Image (cartoon, rainbow over all chains, first blue to last red; front, side, top):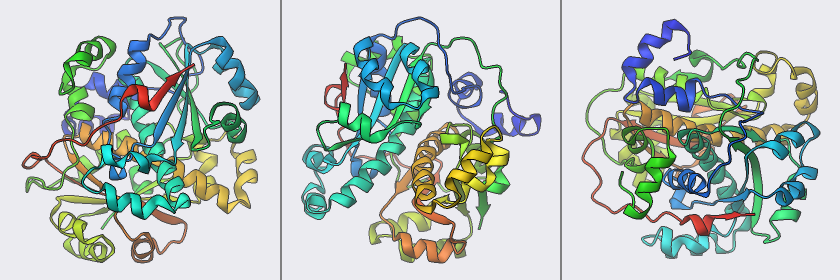
Length: 210
Length: 210
């Protein structure tokens, strides 16, 4: 594991996952800007989703919606709405996913949370702001699962928020219940980054125990 | 793996993680409401954080802040701000974490993103709403990593958003730059749930390929 030696011993003794899995998901995984030419199959996309969907969400709301961009035409519809520095990455990535949330998650409650569907649908029916907040928050939570799931499938990911959300929504989310939160480039690993990993905050800075 | 047989074959062939790791993180992991009595060590808390912090965030902003509640006194400060159905779980869980975001993440950019610190700090200095949105979104993303990291440490988690955020912020986040997003109960697995897992949305409902 590529982490300071002082904590490496502790880490190994504290985890149930083996070193290889922990490296794949967390310690050696890096945000990617280039990939191998290998295509990503539809089966791999489905496997990523089958893991992503299992992560917990509030009320089992599962507001995340994915738009996979396989065709060159679909990429060219997205590229104008990316920051200049992100355009070439998205043109050349083996796969691109637009991550959005739906604010109509509550309408699926009879299927996703039947034991409380009635009261939740009543609570949220007239509360679009509440549905948007729940949708965005829980879709971001699911984006964390999605990134881990893509790594579990052996892919490296390049999440991007340097995007024009209004432009992407107008182009891809004509159904107005969907709003983009992030674009993620994916593929089999290419040449590793030669840049040092950016600093991560220490335990004592980011946490406190009471 | 506990998933319909039709997709099990595909899954195994599409993943680089072994079955045990995938089960621990995604397929067999369930939201917990009770745990074994075993205490959770400080080393385990640090291990969870050491994994959590490695996940990517926008601008490497890392806005997530954790308040671990080990003492009974600290639990009793939290319990009044939980929905009734959540109070006993939090009293009895071996460990409780309050997950918050800071809207002062930009002040750490010289350490976390030195190559773009100047322009980012200038952009966000007068934009509290933008810093709050970035902070909340990226802390929710990190909450996804946190849940996976806790499972990687062999714990089961019970994330809760049935909370009174204003009450928790007044009690624990007197530093007004922090806002709670979620409370998570954690511990070693207790008696498994005898309830069926709630339905997860099918690939064809939640995704589309262009």
